[in-house]
Picture 1: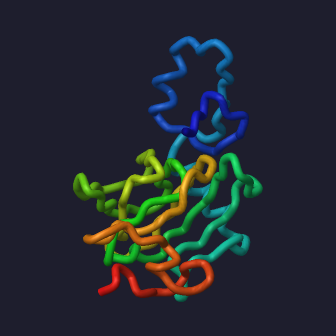
Picture 2: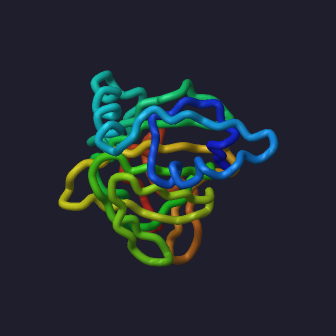
Picture 3: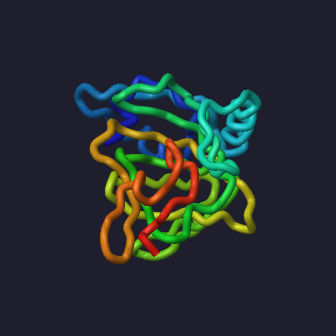
Amino acid sequence: MLNFAQSTLRCPLHIDHCRRHQARRPYRGETRVSLNYADMDDMAAWARARMQRHPDFVIGEPAYLRRWWIVPRNTRQNVYLHEILRDDDDRALHDHPWENTSVLVIGRYREVTPSGTFLREPGDVVHRSATDAHRLELIGGEPCVSLFFTGPKVRDWGFHCPNAWVHWRDFTAGENGELVGRGCGE
């Protein structure tokens, strides 16, 4: 589980939620993180500046997602800047190999989950366990940018098809799942 209070990572994130908790006393052994930016406009400017360089990783052909590594990739916790360029595959919801937290910085999207569909807007913070299924749908086809935090890998990931869970390598095609594959077997 991600715990900013125990992290030594300096992050550009600052939201009202964090301000509400500054007044409480720290837990024993807790380390406070000083956050650099005060509002979402500053976060968006920071993200746009980071995205001026080539992405570290691109998923999809044509590109579905462009990823920049904010900290060097590692096995414990990663922080990515994601530019989401198109909707997730609409054949099934997917999960992730790690617990994760998203902070939407630019744009809006609908997040489809088994519990319903939720509108996500800049400043929204969403935490998901590795097994939480979801799908993202862009609003009006406009790209979105999020800061995406992961914990350590705890499982393989895949798609929640009507009849069974399907491993991502069986659902997608291409070396990194970047191509449309057989899906749920339809």
